[in-house]
Amino acid sequence: QVQLVESGGGLVQPGGSLMLSCAASVRFFHINHMGWYRQLPGKQRALVARITPGGDTIYADSVKGRFTISRDNGKNLPSLQMNSLKPEDTGVYYCYAAISGPLPNYWGQGTQVTVSS
Image 1: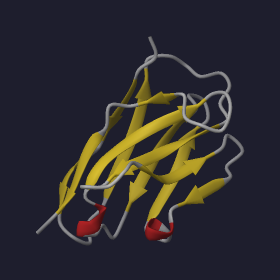
Image 2 (image 1 turned 90 degrees about the vertical axis):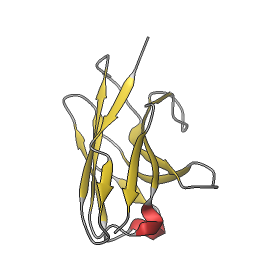
Image 3 (image 1 turned 45 degrees about the vertical axis):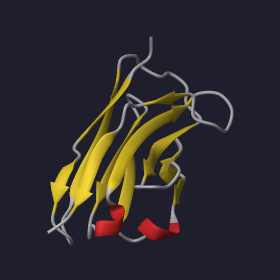
Image 4 (image 1 turned 30 degrees about the horizontal axis):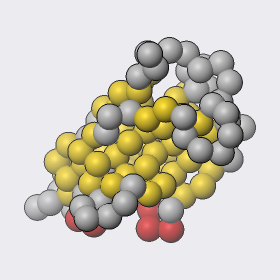
């Protein structure tokens, strides 16, 4: 069974930074894209950032200029550097991998990010 596990979440003050990482129980030899979603309180899960093995990226407008997604091409897994964090970034962050087709095939269990003073 494929499992993704996020790490790096936690409590940070506004303006602070966190780095999220994603580990997998298997190695993905082929991947269409990978990245991060988040679920903010009272809202549906939404894309934060995604990256292809070739390095093409997409970001949600709300995080552009503050978050940077990168990938470990050897493992086909994403990381997310989050800077200038705001209270409205508070939520659960999920890494995903899309192996076939445009939609995520595998999800992590989520990691809580709380931005508060």
